[in-house]
Image 1 (cartoon, rainbow, N blue to C red):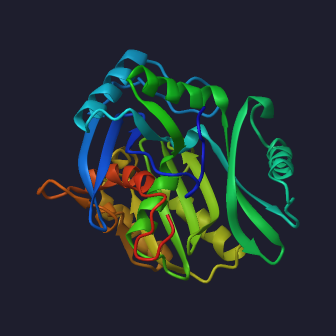
Image 2 (spheres, one colour):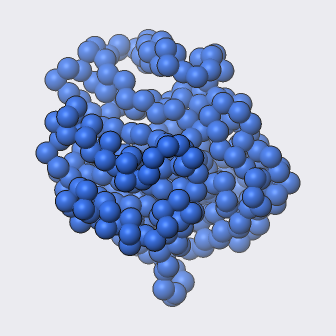
Image 3 (cartoon, one colour):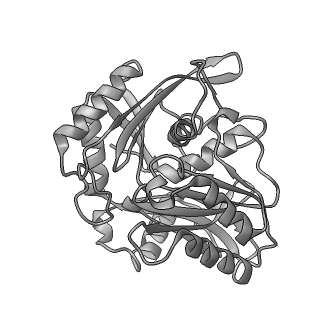
Length: 324
């Protein structure tokens, strides 16, 4: 049975695997006293077209290539048999749902969440895997972060791991675990902050208020408009609808790795965002949460690759007061 969960909602596994359209990556941690260290990591490229992340259709198109790549990265990180799995954001629909009153019984809350999201689900709710966690508490009620995916698609990803010899006891979205990596590295600013996560075939934007997600948007890479357009639209929504007072921090993830195809030069991306948001832009650095064991200079591409893996592995630990 899979666990399709959202932010900080399940214990961390022994090793993490990310399956993306262009590559498969894996990492495991060890603890040296109170310090987490990336003990091993590995990445394998995938042939073009081997995986096409999608919400409603089959994602796998070259099963042998995917299973082979997963098996090789697992071998290089010690051959774990239980893993957490990070998958592309586009396989799920993420919503923020608010209730004025929350049912006391878990079963009643589950039915209420499913009733609410079935209105906009692109497939029958009976075919869906639904996960939710509490979000921001507001005067108007309690928000929940709800993720919905086709059960058959989640089972595709689980099946790939099983064929490679590992049980994916936790399946989660890549961007949620980039957020977890940021939160694991240092206490979040008390004000609002923004994460822009750029992958090969999509971009996700998360607006955070401390440790709480207050807005999430995902857009496919082949959609109309540029990254700057997406950020501008999000900033306008933040100012007009969320009455935002500005971002204390802006972080870009993925733009130097798999997302480089859609963004080009990462420095150009940073300059564009800084100009639009009038805020300095940082790149994600998971070393704030977990050191890297091998004594090599960590490239921006490696740091982007490790971010969701480290976030998934540290999701149940507290680092410097941050919830993960």
